[in-house]
Structures are given as C-alpha cells and as structure tokens.
Image 1 (cartoon, rainbow, N blue to C red):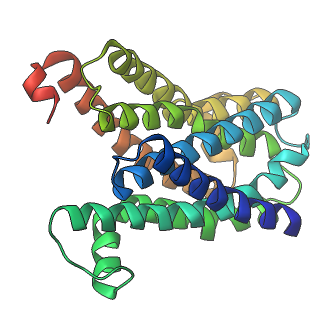
Image 2 (cartoon, rainbow, N blue to C red):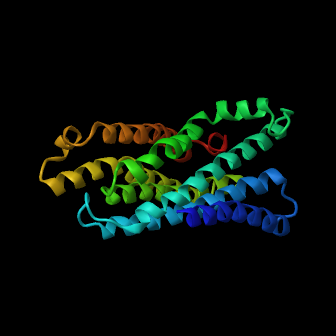
Length: 261
C-alpha cells in the first residue's frame, strides 16, 4: 500500500512535469497554458490506459464475480488516490491559466481563484472527491474480501478517457475539422456508452447470472449501499453522455462554422 502510494505520488506529477519540459523543447512557441493543457491530457491518457488494462485483467481473472480475488483490484486503488489528488490540482492550474488568458487577474492559489475553480468545475471535483472519500474506503475496507470483479469493472470505465483526451488535443491543435476528429468522436460515443453507461446493467446481470436470478431482481437482493454507490457513479456519467451527444450532433450535423464554436 504505502509503496504503491509513494510511487504513484511521484509518477503522475513527475510525468506531468516531464511532458511540460519536453513540449517546451519541441514546441517553443507554445504558451505555458497550452503546454499544461496538453501535458495534463497526456498524463490522463496514461492513467486511463493503466486503469483499463488493470480492470480487464481483474474482470477476466474473476470467474466467480462475488468471491474470486485479484491483487490489482486492491492495489490499483492506491494508484488512483494520488492520481485523483494530482488531477484536481492540474484542473485548477488549467482553470487559472485560462482565466489569466481571459483577462481575469486573480492571484494564483488565492481564495478567489480557488473558489472560482470550484464553482466552474464543481461536478468534476465532486466526482473526484467522491472517489477519494467514499469509494476508496468502500473498496478497500467495507466490502471485505468480496467483489473484486466489480472493482475491475469500474476500472474499465476509463476506456473512453484516451479518446476524450485525444479529442481535446485535436481541438487544441486546431484539427477539429479533420477526419481523425470525426472518427475519434464516434469512438468517444461508443466507448463512453459501453463502459460508463452499459457497464452498470452489465454488473447487475453478471451478479444475477452468478446467483441464478434475473437481472431486474438484483437491486432488491444486494445491500442498499451498493445501489446508492452505483447510482452516484452513473448519474454524472449520464449527464456527461448527454453533453457528448450534443457535441456529436454539432460535429456531424452542423456547418463548419458552427462546429468550431
């Protein structure tokens, strides 16, 4: 646990700083804001890939979805904790630099700039804090030695993140009218829907198959806190999926001028 926490705490900020320095060498004309934005997205892609691989490994290894164990289901949580903490700070840096570019002159790390960040990114920050404060104790302690399969399923939700990051990178590079951006948009829709929306019915169906009951009866047979946790996780996913669908409608149905907004 402590070794994993220490390594992850050094790895993600270290990779972020390395990316910024490499971009300063590779793209000297870029502003610090642009280097921070791209570096954050690259690190996010790396973490998402690690989480997805870990999740698929756990899911494929656990034939008994209730009792089978896999060490990654426990260990990777201690990778996520430093990452989520790091990511909140990087989101704040991105917000502050964007504000400076818009002419909002707030001192970095001041109460006003932090409050502005929390208001603007309240859903994402709440999502991160929920994982840190609620899901981490549940997955590491309160569930006991049950449900590694379902923890692995939650990890695979990160499959859509590399495509989301690529989409933002292409927009940052002014490549939003390219074929690559359109294809990537389809991949975002598909992976997000499969791994962040259908994931939850899949988990209920897997449990129902394990214990021999229909999937629609599963919510009435499992502890209430499991249903509450799942509802808390899927709610923001449904909101974000709605936003993704709206952007996709503009991308594939609007004029080039409308798509660039």
